[in-house]
Image (tube, rainbow, N blue to C red; front, side):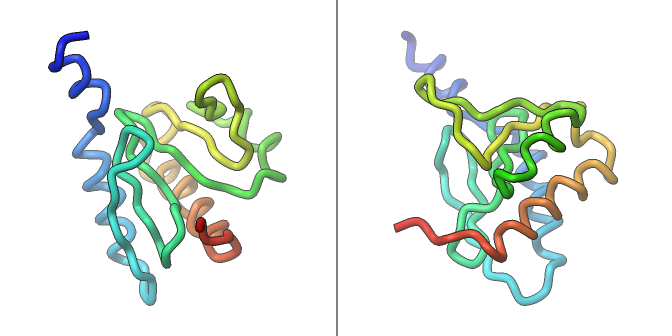
Length: 121
């Protein structure tokens, strides 16, 4: 595989990352760090992975008990890595968050779960 293909595959939408960053900057009393992971840019809120800009998609972390209600939403894709479906994580394609109201829905979903999420070791 040529080197430029590897770089492209690891890229994320910088406009989406900016949109996430801008949204999180308006939330009082949270600590946000950014880190490259999952082939994109993760936004770590209060030391827990919250949301990720993954290529052109949002990668969201949420309460796994909400999966049934979320999988019918526009743009929802289950998160599968190395053939394993990861509960409590999903990708949302751009049509699912293009509208500001939809974007806020996903961001609030992630932030709400982040309050209860367990920190990774």
